[in-house]
Image (cartoon, one colour):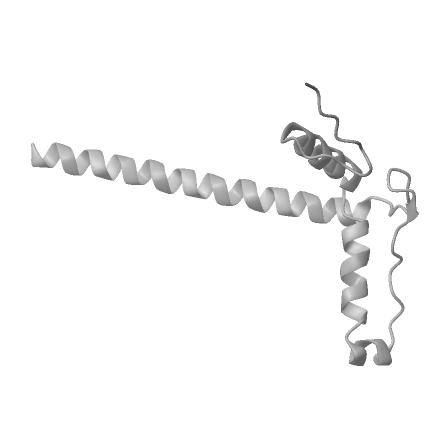
Length: 112
């Protein structure tokens, strides 16, 4: 009886380890795919949905680095040029609407 329990535990542990490896592989594949898309896809300069110019890649300057602005500008650039950014923003907006959150200047109407 004890032997059967040990075999069962070993089998479960093998399954768990296999699932962990699959999770790691899928996560690494997603990260790699997004990285490649970020490198290969052309960078947009204007967001039509937000009606604004997207952040441009900052010019290297020792002065900007010393002020601490250079890397925050790079962060802004990558935030604006993230692959499939417009799709992700529209999904976020849709999910917010499902949760009952509203955007912008929409009026709240109360009905009796």
